[in-house]
Amino acid sequence: MSIHNEYKKITTKRLFDMKQAGEKISMLTAYDYTMAKILDASGIDIILVGDSASNVMAGHETTLPITLEQMIYHASSVIRAVDRALVVVDMPFGTYQGNSKKALESAIRIMKESGGHAVKMEGGKEISESITRILSAGIPVMGHLGLTPQSIYKFGTYTVRAKEEKEAQKLMEDAKLLEELGVFSIVLEKIPAKLAEKVAKSVKIPVIGIGAGKNVDGQVLVMHDMLGMTKDFSPRFLRRYADLHQIMSDAFKRYINDVKTLDFPNENEQY
Ligand code: KIV
Image (cartoon, rainbow, N blue to C red):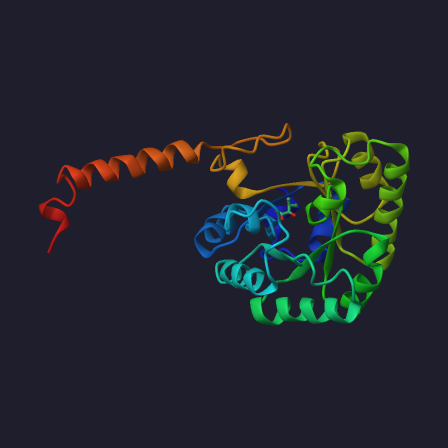
């Protein structure tokens, strides 16, 4: 039996043990109560209340516009559904980058008002002061390196990061620094698989990949993408496990037709 099944509740310590035991960690995003309930009951290890809510829930082009209040709303909905998974909440753009005191205040609001178990922050050395202050308050932090969507206007594109030696070296240094600071895990997004493997082998904390190959300690995807609800996003790393777009659109069309043709409701569906 995998150690995953022995755990009634997933904690940061258990994720660390899973890496040591060579057991891969599963992680998906969720933003609302109903989806989180199904996901938690399915046995996922980590639920990320990602700032990708800005894209898939609110329809923004980037993750930048989502606010702290909106993230707290999504996270508290998820928390009400979850019995087992570790719930990590993204700190939104502008709430932690410039000022470590403000960063701590934002993290405390997330923990107090949503009941989340940990926060995730994008970046390395540049945000080390904010990470240290948040950790010193006893709040677990997950790092995020590689393609960091909150910096999209600096990169200018969503293509693979750290292909050049200089950027790869900086990423490796940042990963080691994050581990030294005390983060419990790192997400690596859209970087070469060989580099991700090297990072995962160089640190003791679990490294979770998205578009970072299989030789890391776990995988994360955005729920709406892997369920096939989003149609206009097809990066190479995305595996679709369902075509909910088709299933939902068929159901909606059948309902509309039944209403128009007076088929719904029938005599058994009324009082
Ligand atoms: O916001 C998000 O969904 C994320 C994942 C892509 C890792 O940060």
